[in-house]
Image (cartoon, rainbow, N blue to C red; front, side):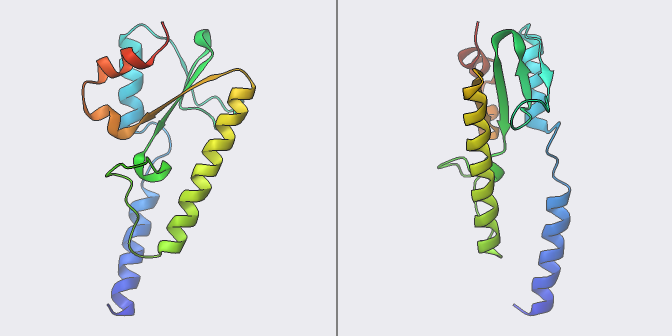
Length: 137
């Protein structure tokens, strides 16, 4: 490919990536709606907790992270592909994300919080049954 074509692809990817939200994503909203319909009450994005968890269930001392399979590298998931261009950049980015996730989870555990990770792809089936099996009573 010519350098001009690569530059245009890079600009397009940059625009696409900058449009991706970190809060109030479709999977996160789906989980929140399910939790609410099941009678759970929660807080969102508590900045005083490591990693600013997507959902916090204070009554159960439980936090929920709704992870995108691509960004957080869901193992053996078809949605966790690596872009073919700028491979080194992406591998570094993904490694940093995973390390940050691990550190935040370790800090939350040390504070006595139960951690639930919900992967984007897990929300594609029977969401209500999945959530019932996952959550504290």
